[in-house]
Image (cartoon, rainbow, N blue to C red; front, side, top):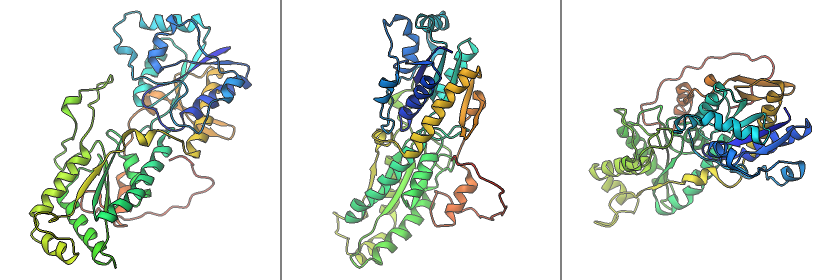
Length: 401
């Protein structure tokens, strides 16, 4: 290895600049020249047409802010296999040969990881650094901790406006068909209810929980103030297993439906039940909130932070993991170990696994959900029983989520 390319792909998130900087720093320390392949797989495909690319010399690497979210290398959502060019792999190899690039460090999620596997199977030397704020790979993925922290902060901060207006607030977050970020962010933000794709939502169960906790909170307050916070994953499923998505938005380049409208749907379901509940008027009157035709039921409002959960600054954990994983990618390339996904660095132990296995989607553990149900959080289903088992652990446990 004399020259390598560093490429990031898919959705941006926290910790990615840590990956880029860690990979560049390790390459420079080994006497390998690292280059940025801009704009993800689109940039890799068009590498042959570029006149020059940027080398991440120690001086240029020093200018990368590892704490900033997003990626110095840029992104695109391109599935190479779908490019209508029968010589697409030869074109990519020719572009790499033009600049003397011997291998690639690619950071991305399951979709980007599947493209990396495709490139490897077509003779391109590359390794995969796991990246997705959805946290749904088999390994820890850079970006997840940053996003979870932001979700928790938004849940906590929304309580001020919710309490001021005695509102029921529904916060919708990314995650596609896995609820890890909604689950962990909601727990950390002290949400009252968390709706995730792994648990089809029974809105009668949610309504009963909301009604009891919301009015209890208000009626026990000396200023009759309270709120109820719900975090919902965009991949919400109703009790019959139906998904909520925007039909008009079509699909992305990987064929995924563009999910939208989960928070709005939850608001509609709760408002419908509030209007039909004969006990609400008396409860509103007792709380001093009722005004006929103007304030007859509590207000249910939705908030969709969207890309705010993936921008700004990274968590310290993601920066550290990103730097280690990026550096590990270079070490593996240099050792000739390719076509794999970095798991992490544990001292001298650089861990990796087969990428095809690493990118298999991982869902929220429902036994873990039941732990929090015992603590009073609603997941849109009757609380499952929880019978703990106990075991003694010898030595140090894994530090990854």
